[in-house]
Length: 568
Image 1 (cartoon, rainbow, N blue to C red):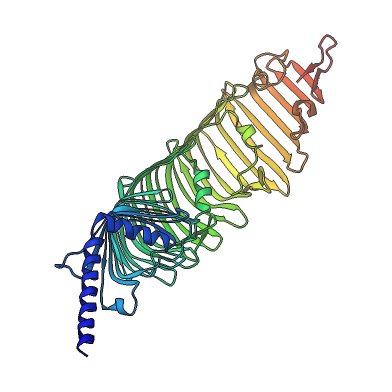
Image 2 (cartoon, rainbow, N blue to C red):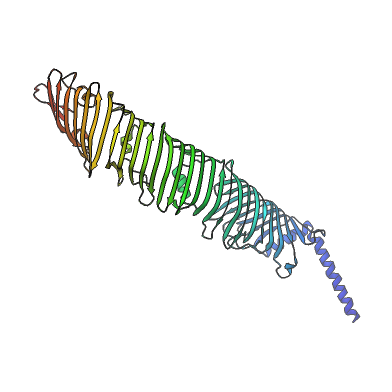
């Protein structure tokens, strides 16, 4: 039996010698190279190890330096100056599960969905790592990331696995959002990402909040605080909205935006403060039963529109956007508006509005603008009540310029847009001005009153004084496909040259007198002037008379054999 004892001692010594030899050899460059080759040949990964280190001061830790790991498709690559594995007694039953895995000073790149890694850990610790991840939903780039996940159990649908996490990053790009000095804490479980706290520098400002990403990909933000951002983009507002409509569903319980400056192509908002409560965005449409938006912005532009000192309180309920209060300054005027817009019907209704001190010049092509196709967001426009005070309206069209000074009035129950067509389809209006100029003819105290009956617009009264005379106009316009109109224009003790200033042919009579013009035509005709027929009578101070008839745009003078027919 003595020989058996010697054999066991010899085998034990050989085993100890082998272990010691392997322990020493494995920590050489040659040993690390041989282990790298063996792992590469017997796994789905290409492995390169610079050195392997073990210190008896930390007996449970094995450290790999200058390590590189990638799969055969190169869709997963890991490079690190240090990769340290902490062992525990759990290795006896789960040899691939470590107590801690430390990755330090390196980079991790992931493209697409990956297979689960062949090991896990109670703690995954990152120190000064760069991460790049791309899949169908996310493009993530992070620099100088320090933090950890506990426990770390990588899955096929996410290498981060499920567990609590906490990290900081010098820079982090999420899709097109660039963040700096990021701090985040939360946990991931059952395909739900919960962010307990989040803070970062965004566009020279700051953002913080907490929320969660649900298994269906939607986001629920309980609180978001954004302040002092200075954000610029090359996109128009329409392009920005189109891009936002492609984002996952977002629901916001409470968002606070302070002192923001936003700028894009042909739009801007400066010094914007806003609070948003209980509002969601899905496919470019809002969601919310009792959503609230309060905002104020010092200066905002959209194309040629420039608005200052805007303050608003909006309520979103179902398909309705209720503008319960909106005040703003535009073109030197002060506006106060209450309105509603229905997202489903695209109907925009002003319930009550006042305008004071407006100075507005109509676009030179405003006639053509009324004929252009409307944007998709509006198909109807009406005004229940509009009060105008002390405003100035100017048209610089060289064919027939006009100006209304100190304009005042009231508009009641007017429908201006019906089935995509502009017009005055219903309602009434009373307007007056201190003075006016129509094609270089100065008028005093012009007053206008009109209303609708069915599809007919009735001009009840358009009066104005000129010098010591008086002008009175009445008329009707049918607003069907064809638009026949009638006009009754009277002048009393007025300059007879006024008519020529307004497009009528010159008269033989001169000076002041009385006149009556009664015509009818069709505003829908390609050549409106050629559709006009009627009669004109004038009498001067010396009792001289002149009568003209117009037939389809051709004007002839009655009882004048030498007068030729003139086209209007």
